[in-house]
Image (cartoon, rainbow, N blue to C red):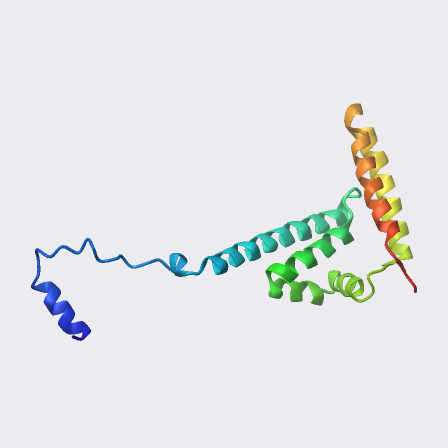
Length: 158
């Protein structure tokens, strides 16, 4: 029986009970569980990369937020969530060189370490004057941890 004959047969059976016939499945329900799981992780990695990139861009203007670690984190997240976004970041005229350099050498230039440390110290002092006394130590503690991590990385030779 072809499709047309099947429709003709259905048209002549008004009292037929089709409750036992399975309904058409949605696309999502036909996907294997592993594929759904992988898609969800890719979306999460993409969102984490976007959030990191936004924080890195904000860090250009706000002394307490370091730009480079957030851009590197964004590149890491994009490498797992979106090859298109990763490629865009690697080819970006401002952020691309720092990501490519990090991936090639896993080292930070001395000048970048010095500038980041000075900016974090400046931001911590400014925050200490503007924040309530019981919270004034928090930016300095966070920046001290970041500075410790930054100075523990290898220094790239010029």
